[in-house]
Picture (cartoon, rainbow, N blue to C red):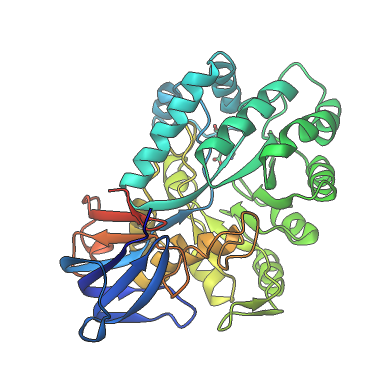
Length: 406
Ligand code: NIG
């Protein structure tokens, strides 16, 4: 099939989120196949096979959702209602979803996960990670990983999500590090561990992370979600690509994260990547935890990602726009910073800010020549409307790898 080029023009605001942080007015973009072939002032745009006038709307990179748990069945409305009535969130609810997930066949589990991906896509998400973690035995975790690999761009092994009630925690940790990891390995790029009271202790979490690192996986950590704890320092120690949740951070935690970026040249996008601080504001609100200190992290020089954490227990939404809105209205980020965290920040956390890792694909999360053509057209003249008009359905059109998907 012949590759067609498309000129998208009459863009009032083009927020590139590229290395120079460019925001162009009266701009245009040329898509050629799956890639961006040109972008710049509309008046200087080259000819293309097709022309699309977006009528003075804003264009951003598609959202990069770097933290989701989409492979699950069942419902936790009752737990949510109890929480809204004053109960606190505890990791034990994961067992409820595990039971429902185990009881659901491959076809239905895949259909459910695909439905969630479709919801995300329709709201502007063009690249996403998802995790296992509702299987919690060797066979079910491998099944989750296999299904996840058919619906998401990148997959994280989270066998260390919760210790099932009938198993000794050390024996379960051995299983995660041994047969469960081996069974999931063909389908995953990352490993994660829930290092928290009620889930995995620091030493169990370290064992899991080191075993997964030895197996060649990149690392991530669920840390400091329900209280101050060792998650962040452990993530730094093992060289994790991100530490996620981070609601309770001591000054030492922020300093340690900042230290991981000392060999990174942010203006060139080169050097050693450190540990991204991934904030999950929809989860923070749904669990009534303090919002993660994204402002302090950015001020300390730590790259921040915003992600939906779509899951049935703590954050049953895939709306990245909601996360951006909350980050601006409640967490002290500017619109540009919040959009950057939900696009380039997510790509940095998944090592897809450049095109060379994992699947050999093109860079995502920013708009520049050669990058994947993942575009989000807002039904608004500027990205500011994401915060100015909270809760409004502002997605007008979406391109994923050069294909119009909405
Ligand atoms: O990221 N914190 C741990 N894991 C999920 C929640 C899992 C659940 O309660 O089902 C999260 O919030």
